[in-house]
Image 1 (cartoon, one colour):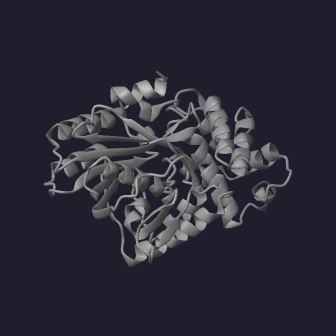
Image 2 (cartoon, rainbow, N blue to C red; image 1 turned 90 degrees about the vertical axis):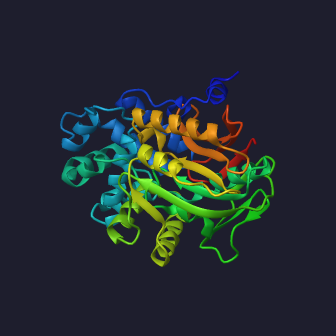
Image 3 (cartoon, rainbow, N blue to C red; image 1 turned 135 degrees about the vertical axis):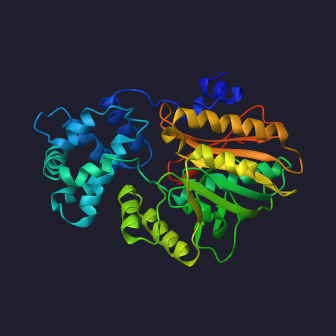
Length: 365
């Protein structure tokens, strides 16, 4: 049995933090490979350029802070924090020297990025203070495909969803999006956005699904109605994926019309709170998250696991519980779509592999 399958069968949370060890240099090397595999060569160039000048004693305060990082640099997404800051400078127009890189032209990347990092250290330093907010709407295709599968297993197709690490709550508006998943269509006709990821493998079950509620939490929620916060999200978008900027604009407009149900709270407290609330009969309760667990402290991960196990023991066919996780595996340089449900929740099911931002889904379910 493969190592990933062993983690799934055991029900362990360990699989949510796979491949996140290593030092700063290893973190940057892994991020370069990850970007290249996920169709982001420009972002890979920025990360590689930063890595090339990390050991320069005259690189300045920003790169020195990265070089001396005290936490786990890959789990903390330090390369993407730094790349987000560089991208923000380019987007603002204050660093035209970066233009050849972002245009995909030949350039001395290390010299350009190193000089910008040294000169703009004060502007860049705040980007290291917290993890990236890559709240990508395209990932919701994974959640919806998993819910179609759950309905196909006989669980009620009406879902009460709660998301941890919801950032700006973009995926909390998935009931306003339409999906074509391998030819299986679901969602409103008059949708805010439509997703049609490249589908590999057989389609998910063609089931009828609906939503009783969608709620979420984040320790630092983003207000899409605030232009400055929305602009910060834009800086985290990989520039190669132009359609993602349009998606963010559509999400901002949708949030202005009706804001997502999002609260400031840590993940464990929120999960425990949601599980303690009364559950309507004939509704499947779902915990969902994407690219979050690497940022959740270990003690909170353990609390979440215990809470879900305890709630799962009380679940019934009329009031079932499910868990949908879309998390990165840095060893495989990709993402797995994993699901567990109760009654019968002894193991995880690996339903799919997916692109980091929803461009394709390889269905295994």
